[in-house]
Image 1 (cartoon, rainbow, N blue to C red):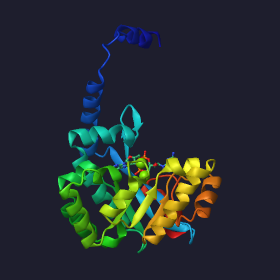
Image 2: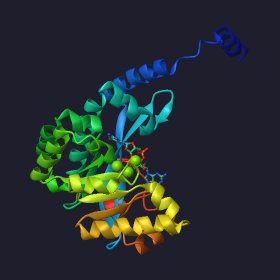
Image 3: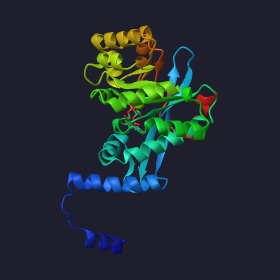
Image 4: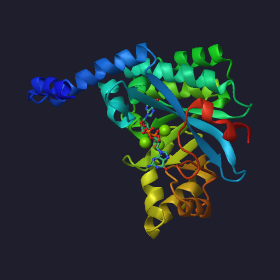
Length: 272
Ligand code: C2E
Ligand code: MG
Ligand code: MG
Ligand code: MG
C-alpha cells in the first residue's frame, strides 16, 4: 500500500491543462478506435402507441462506453464526430446495426434511426439505406429516419433530393426535436414528414405552463390534420403522460414509458 502511494506520488505532477481542442482530438481518436473494435453499441428506447398501449417501434440511440472514462453521452461525442466527418462511418454503422436488429422483431415493429445533418448533406444516405435494408431483409416501411429542423434550414438541394428519394423508397421520415429550431412551421411546407417529434422541453413545461400546453395541443392537432403522427418526447413522469394523452398526442416516448436499453432487454416490449 505504501509502495503504491509512493509510486503514485512520483507520478504526481501537474500536467499542462489540455486545451479544448486537444481534448476533442483525444476523444476523436478514442471514438475511432471504439468504432473499429466493438466499443460502441446501440440502445433502443420504446416508442409507445398511446391508443393501443404498446410499443409501435424503437428509437436507436448510440452508446459509447469509454474504456476508462465510462459512458460518454452522444451530446458530447456526436458533435466531435460531426466536425471530423467520422459521423459518416458511425452513422452507417448504426443504420446497419439497427436494420439488422429490427429484422428480428415481430412484423410491424419499426426502428427509428437518427441522421446527422452531415450525413444528409453528404448525399450518400439513399444508397446506404437501400443497402442496409437489403442486407437485413427489412421492409422499407419499418425504417423511420429522424432528422432535425436545422438540416432543412439551408434549403440544400442534396438534402431535399435525399428526402424525396427516401420517400420514394417507402422509408418513413420524422422531424425530430420539433419546436427547438426557428420558424418550425415553415419546414412543414418545405417537405412532408410522416411524424413530428415534439421536443421534450415542451413536454416538461406543459404540465405547469398553460402556454406550453397550448403548444403541445396545437402541434398534435396540426399533425393530425396534416396526416402526421405527433410523438411527445421526454415523458418522464405519470403527469407528463396524462398531459400528452389529454393534448391528443397519439404516441409518446420517455423514461416513464421505457428507458433506452440493450437489444437483449427489449423482450417485454416486443412480445408482451
Ligand atoms: P434525440 O434523437 O432527440 O433522442 C432522444 C434523447 O432523449 C435520447 O438521449 C434519450 O435517451 C433521451 N430521453 C428519452 N426519454 C427521456 C426522458 O424521459 N427524459 C430525458 N431527460 N431524456 C430522455 P441520448 O441517447 O443521450 O441522445 C441525445 C441525442 O444525441 C439524440 O437526441 C440525437 O440527437 C443524438 N443521437 C443519439 N444517437 C444518435 C445516432 O445514432 N446518430 C446521430 N446522428 N445522433 C444521435
Ligand atoms: Mg431522435
Ligand atoms: Mg428528439
Ligand atoms: Mg434531441
